[in-house]
Image (cartoon, rainbow, N blue to C red):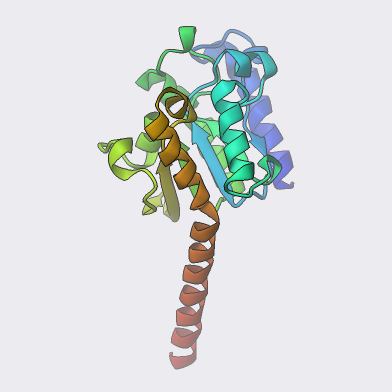
Length: 209
């Protein structure tokens, strides 16, 4: 089974379980992730808004349009080469913040996305997705700083970022949002360098012992 097949199974399961999940009553309420199953970068937002719930795609409203535009024009990544998802897969009423119980209910689906894609880098968009990996910190304190964490017995690199909706509301936040996105190519290069160093060290260890 390919990664694409595995992701499709996740979304079939999501739709099947829709009536039992918070914020949803039917399969059409769900907004699955989208992008390349082989993406090196996975972006995780918070929850779908109105336009996302209508189009059944993440980040297609005004903030999503800003995100996709900056991603391509400033960071040089086509949206089809990355993967974009949310911690909650259905729209909260009036676009309110997702509740802890709602985040918990959808967590298995997001975890499966991460495990299937195995991205080199996870960029969190907003405080709720950041809290999945980096609890008890503020986005304003750590945005744009790469973190190496252990998650489910594997090493992940996580880059906290402002949510693009916040960037729309405040010019200074927008500047920070753009600057953080522009770091992505250099971060991937650094991750590649770290992998090469690790592989070299492993080869030396095997040769010696």
